[in-house]
Structure formats: structure tokens, C-alpha cells
Length: 263
Ligand SMILES: Nc1ncnc2c1ncn2[C@@H]1O[C@H](COP(=O)(O)OP(=O)(O)OP(=O)(O)O)[C@@H](O)[C@H]1O
Ligand SMILES: [Mg+2]
Image 1: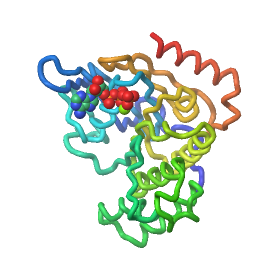
Image 2: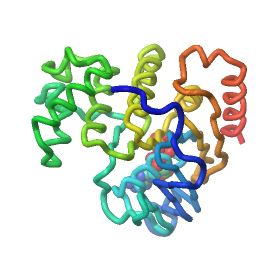
Image 3: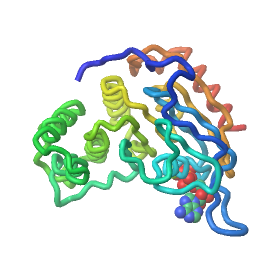
Image 4: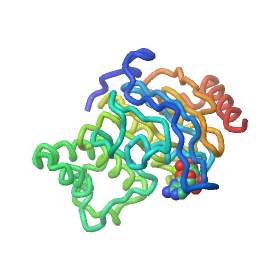
């Protein structure tokens, strides 16, 4: 795959892929938990948005509602101009746990996406192998998930989420369990794929530096009930490099976001 763009392709407000308006989510009746309160969020097509926030502030709930996997209590999510009322098909999701199947090979796990969707097997196989190549796993196509490390497994899950050319990638703390060095490498892989495919990405993470490294914008949510507390544009050139994290600009973003999370 080749890098086709240097930065998010569209200027502000011209082409929104996701529009969250006045979103509320309450779990249970009466004294139930208010997970989200009056959340507004707009994500432009092709943008990479990271979501930071304390545990329990509703980040996963927001992703699940966006994907159409959980209904909101009130308010709306519009994706590609259509109100979300059922599970989206044009979406790729990577969960915190990789959900690979041990009885399938690595390639078989990526191909699950094609099997579920009834996509052309030959074309999908080609695409799956190409994706595995991009993340350095082509040589492991015939192995089983239990033969892989945690980082390799997450890469397989990422390939599966990308197989059907989803225009929207939703990532819920996909790399939280990985060591720092593996995480750096997988972040570089993810950036490469995002740059090459032009997809929109929304990623929940607990890592401030991962958020800055990957995102065009970092959204900070407040503790329960979850609200959008800050929306910080990350104006660093693409492709981002590991060395950029040692620059004063990167450190300034870190300070801003740390401050936002504390308040
Ligand atoms: N299916 C559910 N039933 C009842 N309550 C739920 C359900 N899902 C989430 N909640 C509650 O909603 C709140 C937000 O949960 P959510 O999983 O969205 O948080 P989060 O920000 O993703 O947290 P973490 O960073 O720990 O993953 C929590 O108080 C949680 O207990
Ligand atoms: Mg969560």
C-alpha cells in the first residue's frame, strides 16, 4: 500500500462522517447510571479522532452507539448523512480483547469478515494477505492465534476490521495490553494503514502520547456522566515519527491534555 495523503483531507465542516447531537445514555431505570449526557461530537471524513477520559466516563458506550450496537436514550448519531438505528455495515471495529478464533488460522481469522459478509473469497484472500504484509505478518498467515504474541494478535484483529474497506474504523483501547515498544510499532502500522486507506478513525485510548501521536484531534471526556470537556487539534505534520515525541510541541500537547483530564 502507498501513502496517498499527508494529512486529513477535508477542511473543517465540509464533509462530516459522524454527527453526534445531544446524545444521552442511561443504563437501567430510576437511579440507573447516566453514562453519557448531552454529548455533541462531529468527525470529518478521513479524520483521526482520539478519545481520552477516565474509566467509566462512557467512551465505549459512545463507540457502541455510533456503531449502532446500543441504542441511545435520546439524541442522535448520524453517520454518512443517515441516522444510526441498526448496526452499521460500513464499519470496522477493534475491541480491547482481540476476539480471535483459535480454530481458524491467522488468515482464516481475517477472512472471517469476508465469510460473514459473503464477499468474493479470492479477492478477499488477496486483500487479507496484503493487509497482513502491511503489519509484518504475511509469514504467519497459516499459524493459529495461540502461536502469536498479544501485539501480533491485535494486528490480526486490525486486519480483520479493515478487510471490507470500511470507511469508518472504531477502535476501543485496542493496544492497551501491549508493552511500550510493541505499541510504538503497532501505532506506526496503524498510521500507515490509515494514511493509505483514507478511512475515518475514532480511537479510545488511555494513553495521552498515543492519542497525540495518532490523532488529528483529541477529545477529552469528563467523568460520569460523560461529556465532551475539551477538543484539542493536534497540528503536527504527517507521517508522524517516534522522534516527534521528543519535541517541545509534543510535550506542550501532553501538558495541555494532562491538564484537561485533571479538570
Ligand atoms: N450494558 C451496561 N449495563 C449497565 N451499565 C453499563 C453498561 N455498559 C456500561 N455501563 C455503565 O456506563 C458507564 C460507562 O461505561 P463505559 O463502558 O462506556 O465506560 P468507559 O469510558 O469505556 O470506561 P473504561 O475506560 O473503563 O473502558 C459505566 O458506569 C458503566 O458501568
Ligand atoms: Mg471502555
